[in-house]
Length: 120
Length: 107
Image (cartoon, rainbow over all chains, first blue to last red; front, side, top):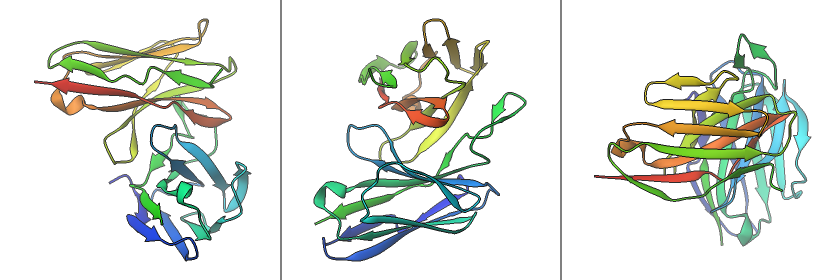
């Protein structure tokens, strides 16, 4: 276990549904991330939160709406998705966005197991 | 040019073989470098950080060449359990992930 928990692990939804993905980290980290991983593509960074504040939105369509109520929890609200949004959605956390502790980078990310999303 | 480029593979090697992966990056200002491992249908997990002087962790050796902007990962004495996709990750203000190199170790 990495200390980052995602639920649900699998989700099937229609294009008119509204659902939410949840991520919780027990590592005392300050930064949290949402990534999308599609087949044969690199991980795509979607959103970054640092101390509950959104620091990055990587041109993500508005049908994806993140929420970060505190440093330990991150949600991704989904509505009116398209079939091409089907992918593995990964949450990650890191101690901080940057900096070093000795030689160890503080932005090393630890991932949850992901939510495999299918949009019909 | 992609920010992080890796040979997608797959690399099919027998148990006990030595295999090396290379990764190139485009931003010369990149500061930190990592190798992650991702098993099929699982999340990426940190394998090792890559330090300027190069570093070794058991059968795994990582090296950084800043002048040529590439990172390498060497795996010695391959095990069946090493079969996975290896992701090269470069820190340029944010972490940029490569598409990964798939390794398949066969008996």
